[in-house]
Image (spheres, rainbow, N blue to C red):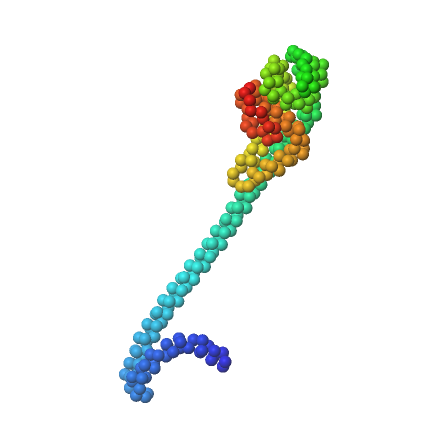
Length: 268
């Protein structure tokens, strides 16, 4: 019973609105219960006309609300689908970025192993038989190179010499000797492998650094730290200067930026 009263109280406006036509009719034609069929027919026509209009209006209102609700639900579903699609696209892009970074990292690791192996070896002695190398002495740097030493020259020691030769004055002073060293570097398998591997490593670094589609370019710094830890910063500077030395003979210098060695800007 309490529920009934609560329901009536909640919808009292609607109930009053629905009973109002009957109240107005009785107010105007209050002659008691009629025995005439015509009176009852007139009363039925009156109610059907009133309530039919109310029913049609109510139906149209409910249909419109249903359509509006359906649109809201469709819009909500579309927004969810768009969000899911965006998340999936971001996930796919992230996966592509990580795969790209992984490939570049694996290439760098492969190059590092080959570079370390080449640095641990000596130059091929047979290449000196075809060359005429003069003994030299650079007093200011306390470096002496002679033919006997060269035939037991390690790749690391040669790179130290090349790093020194990147000074423009020394390079021009020992131009004839440096021309022959260029031939040695081309003939020796270890130094040729060093040149190629350092070029590939640098290409991988630059691929990460200039990558525009995400923030993985920030990983370039971490990769440089990894390279320095693996080879030592001194070896990295030697390899940079090695490429600079070769660039003096080869106009097609592929390394545009040196990460580990400050290149002296001078005319070759």
